[in-house]
Image 1 (cartoon, rainbow, N blue to C red):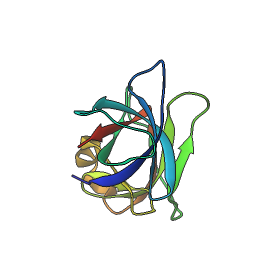
Image 2: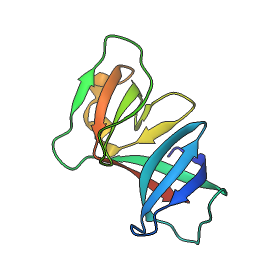
Image 3: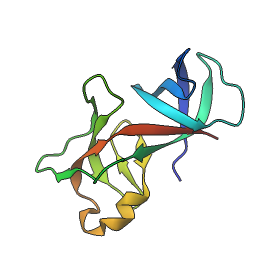
Image 4: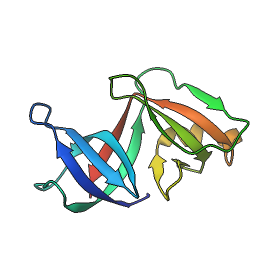
Length: 125
């Protein structure tokens, strides 16, 4: 798996699992279902980030090389832009976001894609 060092920017006071983190200059809102210890704002933690897709996967092969994250409206969803790896998508900034879903699409290995994620899951290691 791909371990990243994440800075915790914000915790939601109402939704316990909601975390705003920054990894290599990329900030995003994630859900932390797995957090085996108490976490604190402005501290750095080892994390693994994965994609949560609730409905049918929405994936588009791109003709251009594009990296990044794009928020979808006010919800927790994101469009991820990047290159498909064996078990993740490389969205640039030395940040890979994992999913078992990539094992089901080996024909897209190495291709640039846009993937709709209903949310990003953050596991504190």
